[in-house]
Length: 561
Image (cartoon, rainbow, N blue to C red):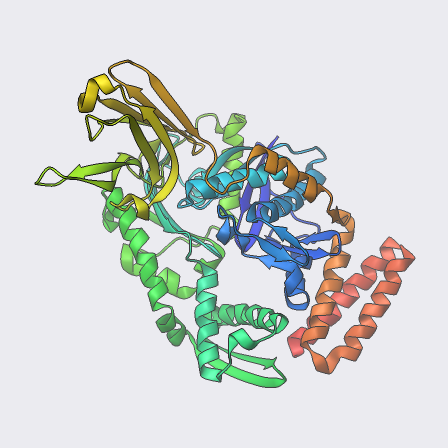
C-alpha cells in the first residue's frame, strides 16, 4: 500500500487511493489537518494540535514552519536538544503514518510526498531524507500544484483543457500550468517563490501592529510573541471574511487594542502581491501562453482564502478562479492519486502524468572577450527549466589552454548568468591528455529523472573514456551514517499512545488558556484539576464525557473573552 502525503508548512495530511478515489485519514482528534508543529515534553514528543497549543506556553520547546529551512544545515534548538528540519519533518510524518495505519490496520512502508514545485535539489533530497528517518521509502516526490491539478483533472473535468494552478501555502508560493487531454496530465511550466506564503502576510500585519502601537516585538517574551502571532492569525482570518477586524491583547502588562481594514491590509501586502505576479508571468512566458489560453484557474493552499489573492488572479488572468475544490485538501488528494498511479490502481491505468524540471541545470564555463582573454565563472545551461522529465541533454566543451592538465567542471542549478549566484551541486575533475593540448573536446551529458535525480556524464571524445557523477546528495545534507545516527536518536524519543492524544491536546490547550486569560485562571485551574483526576480513574466513558464538557467550557471562555 502506497500512501499520499501533503507535508505542508502549516498543516499536513495523509490519504490513500482505495479504488473509488482519494480518501484522507483523520488524526486522533478527528481532524483531517495535522498542524506541522513539534514540541518536546521531557523525553516525549508531541506533534500536531497538542504541540501547537504549546507554542504559547512552551515556545522554547516547540517548533513550527521548519519546512521553510528544509535543505539547509539549520538546526532548531528545543530545550537541550537540536533538530534539523529533516528530523522535525520526520516526526510529523510518523504522526501521519500512525493515523493511516490506525485506519488501515496495516503497516505503511511506501509513500508519495508532495513538495513545492520550486523546491531546489537540496530541498527535495532533504524531504526524501525525512521520509527515510520516518521509516518509509519515498516512491516519488510530486510537485504540489501538479498534485492539485491531478486531483482536479481526474475528479472534476471532462475533456481537454489548460489549467493554471496557484498554490499559496503557509510558506511557499507555486504556479503550474498543466494541460489535460486523452488521459494525460502534462505539465507545461512551473515557477514560484519558496519564501513567500501566508506567514509573510502575517508578518506584514505584525509589523503594522508594532508600528501603530509602539510595540517593540523584539522585547516581547517568547510566550507573549507566540500568543500575539496566534491571535494575529485569527485577526487575519477576520480581515479576509468580514472586511475589517479588531485585536485586543495584553502585552507586557498593558492591554493593547488595534484595528485594521481589508483595504489597508491589501495596501500593506502590495509588495507581496507584486512578488506573486512575477512567477505567474514567468510560467505563462515559459509555456508560451497568454492569459486567454488558460481555460481554468484553480486556487489551492490555505492562504488563498485571502480575498486579495482571488482578486489578483482575476485581474491577471481575466477569469474568476474556481473555488469548489477544498484549498486545504486538493494537494493531499492529488498525492493519493499519484500513489494510486504508482501502484497501478485499476481505475487509473489509463492516466499518464508528466512533470518538469523546475530549475535550469548547467555547468560553469569561461567566456572569451574580443581580445581573446578568458573570463571564468559563467553559467552554461544544459537542461533549461521547465523541460519535461525524464530528459537527457548534451553540450560540448574544450579546455581553455593547451597546457591544461585537468578539466574541472562545476555543476550548478539556477537562472543567473554568473555561476556564483546559482546553487552548486557538485564538481567533476577530468584529466586532460597533454599531447592533445587545447584541441581536446569533451561531451557533457545531463540526465534528469522524474524523482529529481541528476546524473552527469563527461566523455573524452578522443579516448572515449567516461567520467560519471550521480548527484544524490547535496552539500550540507546528511550522509548514510549520519541518517542512521539521527534515526536512532529519534527512535529514543517517546510518543504518547494515539488514543491518549486528545487528552494531551486538551490539557495543553488548558495550559495555554490559563496563560492567556488571567481573569479566568481560577476556573481554568479547577477544570484542569478535575480533568486530571478523571484521567486517573482510567474510566474511558467518564473520560470522554468530561473531555467533551471541558472542551465546551474552554470554547465558551475563549468566545466570550
